[in-house]
Length: 209
Length: 288
Image (tube, rainbow over all chains, first blue to last red; front, side, top):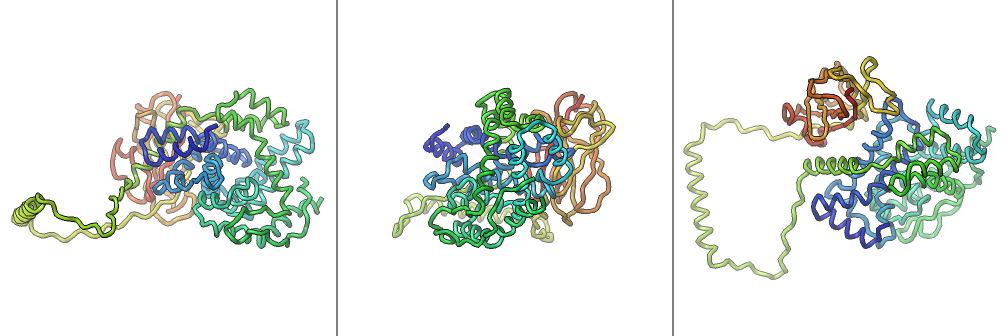
């Protein structure tokens, strides 16, 4: 694991240096970005006619293009003094970019939708999995599905990075190209507008059983 | 399916720091269980993350996944998605960054600013040098005017091309494309007809020019594309017969969707960098 100081130097050289410097940074952060996107795709229903590995590689490239986008501003926005590691920061950017791209490609990409999910669930039921583990995974799939229905890609990124990963809001703002004030405003709006609907949506299947 | 037990009351006041950019955002108390579940879901893939980073073998990651009661389908999918990208993947990322950088203006480094109050004094050689330069420019201007052809209408101001939406590329076909597209690279015989679709990410009204190339390593082979007539903004159906240069082995279909005609022909058209008005998508295929 590289130290923050190593990472600062690596980013500085990638921003100012040669292609070789850029390659050094790509090698350093590529596994984290790859894993982030693979995790995201694992939660989605596979799309027929699309090679998942190719989709993953496309999204990884998209993430790097985003990081080095517009005078490399997204990458230059990382400041370790705020508390976010380089890995967390670039994974946040990668996740947000992937969500944008995937949302534009698919109508309902989440595992809880569509016939593929039924196939997956059927496979799961036929195996001797402990009930609680299956239940937890299914519940998480439901939760993700509900969140994606209620939240735009950027809002989903905000939800995960602020609430699940508890990243510093200033870092989240920098990674998503927002002001810190806008991040706090989103959090307030989420509590006021989205949270009641999310709770109601999650509660609905429980009441029906 | 049983969702987590959640309290019905969601009207809790916002915590301190909410609305003011001072402190961390505190997750809503009502979502404590949901958030914990989300975190557990992320932890589900920890062994696979180590595999992606080269920190363990595929067999070790699979064993950890089985111990966590993942089923065979999930394990197979994870093994495919988390397989390390390797040097080839890094090279592809760098190539994409190079293409993108080539399409954008280079950074312009600003000259160091002068300290306020500093006065620029002409150096001794500057006077004659400037005078000579002015004389040269004037002489050149006279010669150019004398030899210039009769005046023609001034060209129209250049209009930037319309932006093009992102397109997703899928290789299709029944007779020639074999293999399960979910799991493997489509394969076609030598000289076969390759068919594909270019699906716009959103509806649009920009006429789309399409061209395509087969690429492998540094070999670029332009393809003669036959495009089915489709409405503007709809999914484009296209095909090309693979020329003899596209020999056996792995290839990549590179499809270009542009709002203006290709700026070059032949192999040069294959090297065009993506831009706002030109989207480039790629898919691997195998010639057998």
